[in-house]
Length: 194
Image (tube, rainbow, N blue to C red; front, side, top):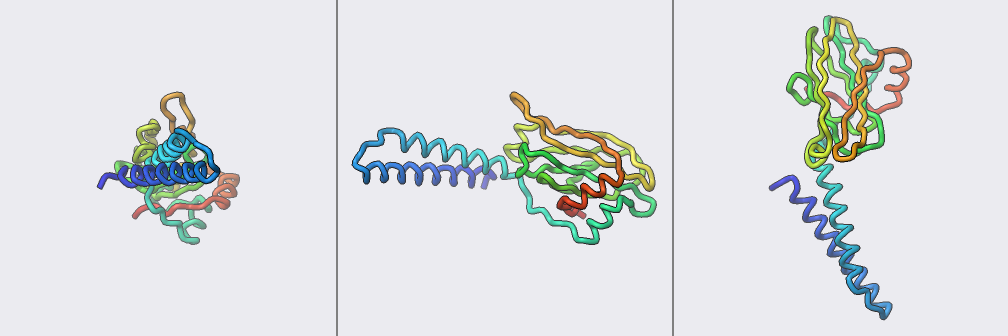
């Protein structure tokens, strides 16, 4: 079954229920509502289907354990490795999961405001942040290439910036410092996929 089947079915049900309820209320009050119940119901159904289709790419995220979060907030990579921290902030599309792909493998999905921490081997890496489902068609993915040295903490902040026709995922590399640790301590950490 298509990932859009459920949003369409739910949208039709919402349209039918709202149209019926408004028609019933109009009949009970002794008036004639004309086409208004059908129009209002249709708008509500389309809106519901649209929102659900945007969220159809969401995966069930796993919250990091307290130990994982403490290690990430300490900004200390595993011995001989680097640590990549990706944090998502902002209001735009905050309920839609943003897939974090590193070197061709999805390692986490972030809603806003959340972060994840991924141990990396030393060397060059490529990271892509992109939405799935209908949200993916409305947002331009972000691709970033970076190098990571042993003991290095690489941190990116992601925000979705609204555009006229297509939104953009804006990535900003930020410093790993005490202020970042404090900020991460107040956020929910999504455990990376293993």
